[in-house]
Image (tube, one colour):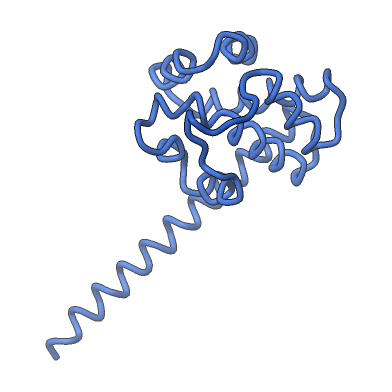
Length: 154
């Protein structure tokens, strides 16, 4: 009998976790749908574009989220970025707008103008999901060339 309340608590906890997971999945799906509408990309390309942009933004966003720039992202976004290595300031390689453009061009197989358009769509869709204060923090953390793109996207 004493085990019954514990079992019920475990079942309630599991139910809450499943509901939370379902809401996260639905929110992520709606985000990709909105991104697809804004960018004109099919769902899988929209997902790849999102991951490309977020991976490229990790280095400058380390200053917004002190330890892990992914921490401020919703759970499904964090999961989508598992294949993207977390980059610190000491990681060599290009950063900034040029690197972002090259990454998106390669990941979605587009030319420069299309890649910039897709990046603006990703940024605008992200911007619509965060508060004004968070948007300002992101803007403040970005290099000048990326900050200009963030401003044009919003």
